[in-house]
Image (cartoon, helix red, strand yellow):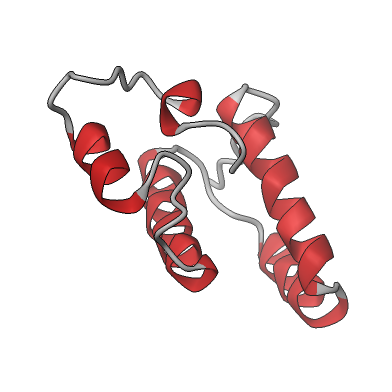
Length: 100
């Protein structure tokens, strides 16, 4: 991460928040957390956000994710994650699928 945590969040230095404690312990760019540990945090937060959203997940999306896992390089997998995070954050989403 080239920018500090406050760039991506509502964290303001000196606000005595969880994000301030995270920055103090692990660095403003998470430099004291391994890549594997960062991915664990990403997995937990993505799962939580996903469960908070309405709609079902099509089986073809699970199949697509498996294909991506099996066929894309690690770099391309990370690129897909980055693209999806940006789209989720800034609202570039299809309408939820509801099955009756």
